[in-house]
Image (cartoon, rainbow over the protein chains, first blue to last red):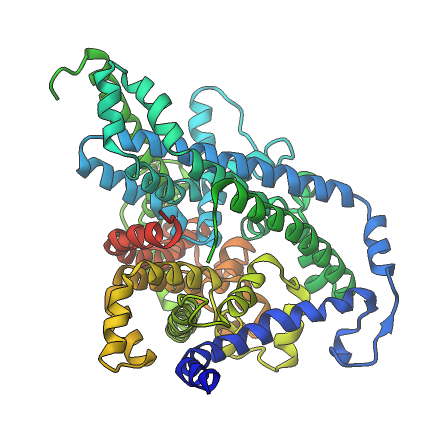
Length: 301
Length: 293
């Protein structure tokens, strides 16, 4: 009796969830089940339910034998880790500096401008970069030329490509990422600053002894949560900016999956690589959330 | 300020100058592209164009606008933004409200929450996702751009955390008055959640506006491409075959560089006009929705 009343009271809640649940079931969970094609010699024309040949771990073995596969793995981790580090250090520093600004109008305008690139796609920003970084006609190399520096192939040289990816990613995201740090800064008790000023602490000392300790939790949290991106080097960015000449330094897991799967139609092989990435990422993210829960008492919902 | 040392004042001045320079550096590339798009191609080729148009002309825009693709792809994008953004907002609200209840009153909450949250941790990857959409015969349909991305789980998390900040008394008072869940959500929760609603709407609209990869692989016919997918083919894949049809005189005014720049600007302007007005809201929405007490 009580149970049925609880059910009828909560029935609207179940109904509200139902449509979203169905969509997620179809477009997220069915593909997860569908990863079994990593173990098939999958012929797309026959479809999911067609009579496909099971070949065990052959697709994985095939991938491991691909020339340069470990270079791809290394490129992925190298670019991703640099982005993770820069993605914390730069926004944190800028947030601290923004916090020192006394004129609210300047602060607001600076924020508006640095948030902008976050809202533009890598098609747009990629187009901008290709124009800007062109060795023959780009503005950057023109400026470098004024100092007598020879044109640099930012997007065409293996020495430069990974760093170009990291720096342009910082350009897109650092501004938007300052928001969480600025929020944490407003949460610090002003009395702590007053006490520090009475003790004669300089601005620098206040930052070191009041601000940073006050932000310890949010910093730990952002570091931990970024760990899940260890294999996310940034598909949207790289697929638009790389070319065959920089595969050695710029080919990453996601671009390899794209080329193997959708361009060469090796569905089983591409799924195997994708599954590998998903499993490794899952382990990292799970550990990261568990650590965030333990260290910062963070719960996502 | 009283009693500020010279060092502190010097730091303040340098800090302000540095941050202003940094923010200008952030948009300088876009200003350069805007200048290129408004200059004649001969001035651009000569390297005269920096941050201000030289030989001002709107011909690159005229050229882009007289070609049908940009309009048809813009139309596809408007459809996906309206349908997809609308569906995102609706489902975000409908999922976030029940999940914002306490487990004590809504026992299935934890199970549902994990069901959605798990998709942020693990995905089947590109190929199985593509195969499901293909198997459902959604390829080449606008629904392929709308339904698979129907539930933006990150936005749901933002929204539900925002709902949880609302005082419990609001809801209790509504129930006392005999209101059900639907009325409470509609009359009490939504009006109180405007900053969060503005935030998730902005995210959903920008996401749909900017998405290009799904359009590229799920649409087989170029006339079904949304704007960003179309731009990907002309800007990034450097498909500039149409330039061959230009006469010499035309090439002195427009070139692939000025045309690309004009296309970039056309896709950027809507965002530039919309987001500064929502800035106040989304900052508040993100802060309250993600960083908890």
